[in-house]
Every structure is written in structure tokens, then in C-alpha cells.
Length: 257
Length: 67
Image (cartoon, rainbow over all chains, first blue to last red; front, side):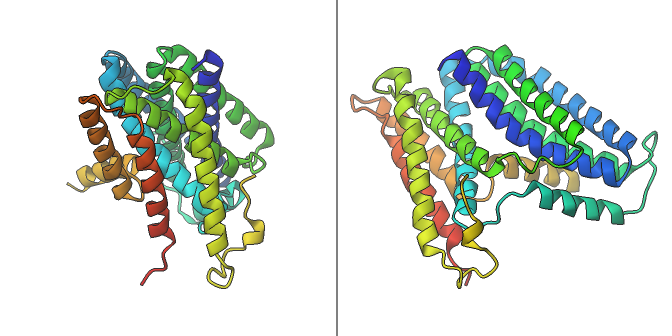
């Protein structure tokens, strides 16, 4: 795996997470109170920094084979979750991820809750909403950056890719002051799911003692194969998903692009 | 106690997700890969086969009408 591929893989995965976190922060800030929302973001970033400080050295100090076994297994479970959801969305069995709709829902919910002051935080609801949003999405960013980085012996580059993704998305969200609905999030989730599944398969098998034919170049076969398999499953499920059976979902609006 | 439960529920949801059978299947496939790798038989094919089985089965469970 080249440095460029490592950067691209981590960047893409982290953009998806950052878009989701940005939507929550925007909803909390716009509907409630920006000051408390900002405190929530900073508190979550502090917790994430502590997680990196503890987990980073621990993960990096593991011998490569057990690391690949554990990380590969986790990535594979993680990746299969993502691919599963992406396939269900693309075939019409699950609603497409819509940042504008999520924003509207969060915005309306945030408007209805009364303002409660706790300690130095003027609006506790805005604080906890942004804190939870950034922490949950951030944990996935940390997990992806750490696992990819340690496996490729280049945590700094993976961290740089993750930070770049977060900065780009946060800056875009700040400029637009609206959810980043134009980001092709469903397609990106599909791609990231395929990527996590492929790398999880590769590293998991290596960690368990298997030797891939062609060594690292096996990834060039595994990734397109997983993508083609996932796309084939979308087509099969679309064929079986008739509008009459699922009146709430319009297949005409479902697309992987 | 409630917070401890919530803590474990969060990590379960974070790692395992919607279908625990997938996580169990992956763990079993990794163990089997390790077992085969200790012999002279190539073991690389087992995880891709596991993916090819686990993913459609999980999708089938998710798309099956609830009874």
C-alpha cells in the first residue's frame, strides 16, 4: 500500500464521519447556542485526544502479527457493517442517508427542549448534543486512522489525512453554514465499506498466519472483487424489492451515485 | 450500574453493530484461518469465502419480512 493510497483511504473514511459530525454541530449551534455548542466540540476533542494518547502508543507497541489479527478482525466486522448498510440503502431497503433531513430533525428536536444551565455551560442540551456527535463520529475517525496507520507503519501520515479531512469538512460547513447535503455521502459510505472490508480481510488473514498469493498486490484483486460482489448484491436485492412490498421507499430515488 | 450498562452497550453497538452473527462469523473464520495456517494447506481463501457467505446471509435477515 503506497503512501498516497494510505492517505486517500483514511481521508475518504474520515470525510464521511466529519460530514455527520458537522451536521449535528450545525444543528446544535443554529437551533440553540453557539457558545455551549463550541464547548461541547472542544470537550469531545479533548476526550478524543486522551483516547489517542492512551491507545496510540499501546497499539503501536503491539507486534505486527497480533496487531493485524485484531485490527483486521475489527476492520472486517466494521467494514461488513458499513457495506451491509450501504447495500440496504442502495437497494431501497433502508432510507438513504440525507444530511438535510437529519439536520432538520435535529434542529426541530433541539428547538423544543428547554434551556438548562449547568456549571459554566449556558445551554446543557447544546453542549451534550455537540459533545456526543463529535465524540461518536470522532471515535470512528480515531479507529480508522490508528488501525490503517499502525498497519502501514505510518501513523503520522494517517493522522494527517484524518486531520485534513476534518479541517476541510469543518471549514466547508462553517462557510456554507448548512449541512453538507451535496457531498455524495451514500456513495462514499459504499466505497469506504468496501475498503474497510477489503483491508480487514487482507490484514485479518495475514494476522491469522495466512500468506496471500502475490503478497500486497493481492489487495488489488480483493478490493475490486469485494466491490463487484457488493454491487451484485445491490442488483439482486433491487430486483426483489418491489414498490408494492415497500410503499414507503421509492426505488426510483435510490442510487449508489 | 446504569452507566456501566450504557458504557458496554455503546461499545457493543460501536464494534458489533446491527448483526452479532457477522462478528461471531468473522471471529470463527479467523480462528479457522489460524488453524489451517498451521498445516501445509493454504489458508488465505477462507476469509474471502466467509465474507461471501456472511454478507448475503446478514442481508437476507435484514430484508426478510418480520413475522
